[in-house]
Length: 207
Image (cartoon, rainbow, N blue to C red; front, top):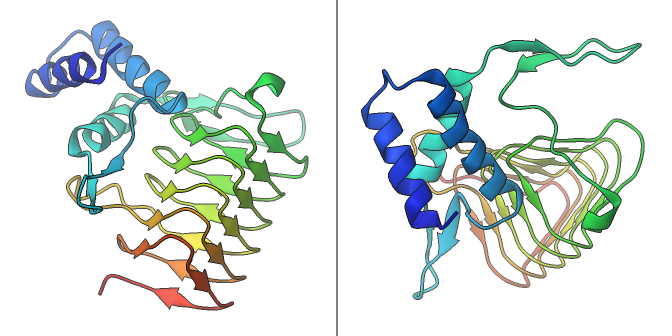
């Protein structure tokens, strides 16, 4: 579905909170599908190089939490309970994403391009976008709506903070060919420009 059409459907849903639940969940599923395949993003780079949040996408993500009901995702040995609207992302071998066994998780509504490597344990939250050939090392976090470019190295325990609210706030952005050292933290909508190197332990915030 074209992004403009999806946006119109979502706007109609948000302006009429009494909408039938089945219809609301159908619109939300279309949003998730578009996030999962990377055809829409929670933030985009404008022609002048500035990054802007797509507030309507973030509003849709938040609507998913409101629609969600608790569901049992437990496995044989491990209990897990979460909103039924936010299970794990459906990944297949053909996606070309390497997820090494050992406790990693990618939530649905996140996009991982071909060639991404996920070392255990790591976590990618809803709305995140991780471009091709990026490495997400052990104990690293890609927070909600964070945007990560191509050939980025997120070293062990690097943290990219999530920014869902306010919906107009820009999420954390890591552009192409950035090296994020071990234990770094990037939060509050900071943008790390192309080719930058963050030494181990660096903290960047917007305040």
